[in-house]
Every structure is written in structure tokens, then in C-alpha cells.
Length: 400
Image 1 (tube, helix red, strand yellow):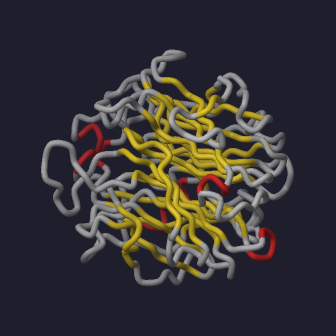
Image 2 (cartoon, rainbow, N blue to C red):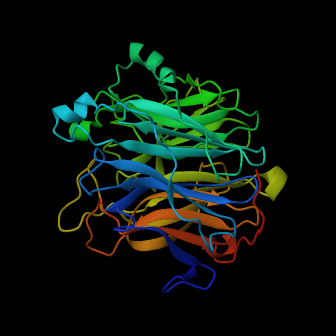
Image 3 (cartoon, helix red, strand yellow):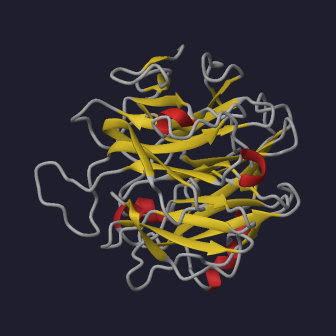
């Protein structure tokens, strides 16, 4: 579908549906991810769910590709098929969340390589196996999925996980070529078989040939309650920042940093400016001082701590609405710029930046009053930095 001017917004913002609920045999599309390749193509991907029951039903990994900045898109296609037999995760069966015979693909994560044409792609199956794929033709095709669950096995000595998940969203390639993907793991004994949990990373130093575990970056202890879905960004000094969802009573995003994206994580801290309604968030670099004139980071999530019809409780979920993009000029220490993209229902999202400086946000959207876990579309918003900053920053070229 071609982009159109956003209702009530300036002409500088366009919005268009990329995935529509109730089409192609899928009840809903959730858990968006998006990257811009070295050749400038946009890859938008998600979980295509046959039902709206939740995370454990029949789910496929779906992808669409645009080579004209999001104006038009290729037909959607399933991009992974792991040969069977398949077995449901026992913790989901124990909680009657899953049905034998249904196959769950979950948590797709892409990393665009600096090498033109190369895209790395990781996802999970049944929240207990992880797989890697690679594209050498700019996302047109992908290699057969290769299992990399062995990267998670060494965690068991510290955390005897029953559930694993990559991302979601996108991973990053560091300046030194290391691939880093945030992950979370759960014992599966708590709610939805996703709790309790801890967060870490897996990484590859040989362009996806082998994968290894990082140290646990965000433990489930003390005031850090159930860290899980995490975004990662490389800072200007080469270190890596993780920005994590949690169910902590602070209802703020949880931050930690490492020099290499794998070990030596700093003591987690809650960021006072980044609200946590208990929902996925996304982070991406817009530019560096070296290549784009200034160090700029972008962050987006539902910027809301209200609950419709009742009093909000610390550490409990809030309404998923008001997805908002924020801008930092000091590598995430402060976020002085903030502008709402979707005041109404809006949930998970993923950010990307095009070479001309255009900012892209793919997010879950639905009419007000819709069910929280059944958005009616994954919508792409596209806008320049000038719109985000109300004209105060008019850079038109992003850069690493």
C-alpha cells in the first residue's frame, strides 16, 4: 500500500499499513522488526499469527521488502521453515497455553551487514530452539535455517532456562564486525510461561558462522524484576548499551552497558525519563559526530503510565498507547526531544534510519478500545529529523 499523509499530522509525516490483520489467512500480525540494508532496502518482518490467543499458537515469520523507501512493498512471504518433527515447549503445555500439533516460530531479529547484500537473521521455534539464516542478495532469499541453540546451553549453569527468545526487533553489527543480539531467558514457571526471566546477549565474531553467549546483563534480583525484551545500540566509544523492559516497580526502562556487548556489564540503572508501561521498546543510532555532525540516538515506546478505568499499580502493565520517538544528543544520558507518533493504541515497535536521514518506525496500531494483544495493523511511519525536533535540527543525512 502506498504511503499517505498522516491524519492530523504535517505533510512531513507519512503512515502506511505494511501488514493488515485478517489477511492472507492470519488473524493478526505482531512483534514487528525492521532494518535498512547497506543497499538501502527496507526489510519489515513480524510474527504472523493464525489466532489472537497469544504467543504459543501457530505462528510464522513473515517478511516484506521495499526498494523505494517504503512507498511500495513486495508480497509478504514466510521466510523460515524448520523441518520437523516439532514438539511444544513443556512449560507452555503445563500451563495449557499451547496445543500439540501447532508450530510456534517466534522473535525474529535481523542485522544488516555493512557488506552490501548481506543480512543476518535469527529467530526461535517453540521458545526453546534458536536458528540462524543469512541472505546474500539483500533480503530477496535466505539460507536454510541452521540451529544455534548451542549458544544458549552454557547459560544453564547459572540460569536453568526452559524458555529462550531473541530480541525482538533488530540486532546490531559493531564497528569491529561483531554481531550482537539481545536475548532473554525464562524458567517458565510464572505467568504465560515467560516469567521469571533474565536478559543477556549472544554474539558472533565470524559473521554468523558461530554464536556464543554473553554474560547475564540483567539479572532477576532485588529491584530488577523480570527483565526481558531488550534493545541494543553501539555507543560512540564502541561500547554497547542495553535498554530493557522489566516489571519493576519503578516503571522505568532498565539500562546497562558493556565495553564489548558481551561481558563486564555495568550495574543496571533505571532511566528516569524513559517510562515503562511493560512493553517492548526500540533504539537505533541516527548519527555519530564523525559521520553525521552530532551523536544522535533514537528511542521509541508507548510513552504512557495510565490504565483505563482503574488506578495504576507499581510494576504492573499500563495501557499500550502513545508510541513516542525520543532523541538523545549525549549517548542516552538524557532525552530532551520527544514527539508522539500515535496517541491512541500503539504497542511494540522498531526503528530504522535511511541513508538520506529519513526515520522509520514500524509499530503495532489499532483503534482505541481494541484488544491490547490484537492490533489491526503493523503501520510504518516515516518522517525527517526536522519533524521530530520541530525544525530545531534539520540534518538530512544519518551516519554511523
